[in-house]
Every structure is written in C-alpha cells, then in structure tokens.
Figure 1 (cartoon, rainbow, N blue to C red):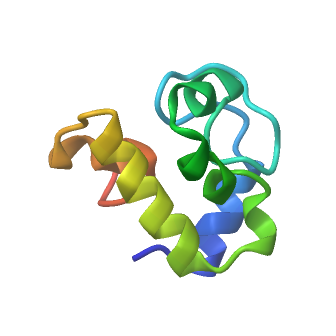
Figure 2: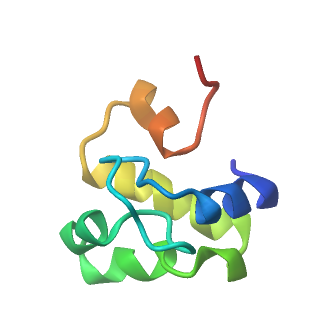
Length: 83
C-alpha cells in the first residue's frame, strides 16, 4: 500500500506517472489520462492530498488495471522499487 507521504509526493509531482505529460498539482494523473477513465474512477484520483492513502492506493491499482498495465509496470504509478 501507499503511505501518506507517498500520496503527498505523488500530488506534488509535476509529470503524470503514466504518460509523462505535465499535470495539475494535486491530482494523481494528468487531465488526458483521467479523461480516459470512467467517471466513477476519476474522483478518487483528483485532489488527492485530502484523501487517505488507502483510497488513493486502491484507485491507482484500479486505474492500472483499467489501462491494462502489467503488474511489473505498476512502479510507474508509485509502487515498487525504483531502478
């Protein structure tokens, strides 16, 4: 799972972890990537500093599954170790 500090780091990150486009500060994904998600999945990935880590973590996992990202590539969404 993601810690509260990792959520804050993801919110302050300038680039989208999925496509490397610039994103609005406070959101997990850029506007383009969020638009590709169904409406019920978007709300959990917007304004993430005010949300708990469990909600954001499960929303990121659901987004990764929705985009058919292989589990090894989930590290792009903030999980796993970085090389």
